Image (cartoon, rainbow, N blue to C red; front, side, top):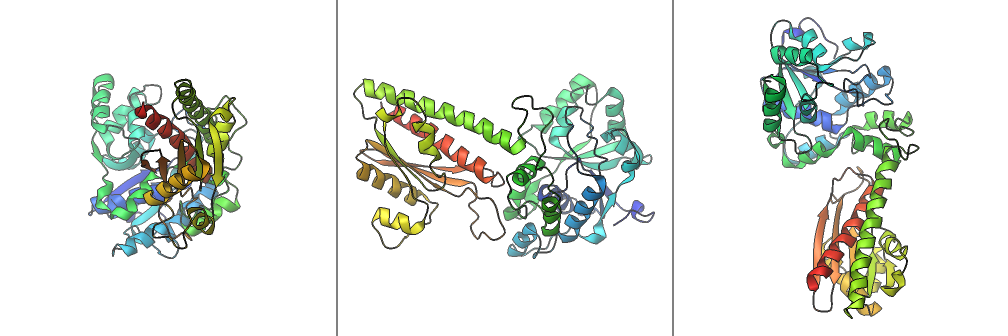
Length: 433
């Protein structure tokens, strides 16, 4: 997959990578381009020298030789259903993935440079007097509004020498962004939006992965085979990449890595949600309205009850809490011998909530049943990141379905489930009165 003179003459698209090893998200983008632009004969991945062109994005970077090995390993296995989850999904849809050894290459030309290689440098190096196609994220285009990140010279080079294929990111309105760049920087960029809809629907979820998700999963000790092809994931795990990584932009608390920081921030949101619910129940108690409650948890392991009972005065409202993780234990609690529903479903959440309200004597009961993950090749269910909530009131049972990015870590999913459960209960109780 090394570049040659013959390869340079093909209809080629370049994909500059930043510092992180390639995950399914990057490879899915390359695959999407081959489907959307079928005349493409070669995609060249440009291996970063580990110096991010955005001055606000610096951090610990794996060695170039290791990133090169991970990238090449990922490309070799991308289309193999036995080693690649997207390839399995494609096979289930009756199609074959197109990104193969004969239509991709890896360029490492920039590794000989000590300075940060900017997008404009790539355009200048590969354009050879004509516009060159480059795959970039919409977030990178958005940064072009900032003259600190992209100079006038950078944008002039990019405008003159490139056609940008923009990957959708974070709901960025690319048309609005391009208008701002034209108004504020005086540059009219040639941009085409990459459309994931050209791929089978069951492959779309892999666009939800980001380099941040891969790092946090690694820090949480999760298997990475749902994020990267098999051997590439093994390289990341065996070399303990990111386990001690601390984002440079974090000031407080400075000792946390990205996963720990994310969980820290979610726990703060959880405390706020629990406090809001308690204030609502305090008001209901003063007004002589029903306010005593109980909870059933299957996925969150007691974190819902813990968040509320950690508040002063919680005993005025909280009666009972159960963690019923095992399926047989749930049957016993519900007084049945067999299930007619899924463990992650509306009916399961409703039945658990209603049974808890009756068994505890509470005014209302809240139940959650979900799948926190982590994602794994061995898991048959594809409900990772889903959660159903049941709220049993004296007159009815309500439910809500939650669905989060399946590539978040187990701990993040658990915290999000609890935050949403407490927030939803508080809103529903306020509707009652």
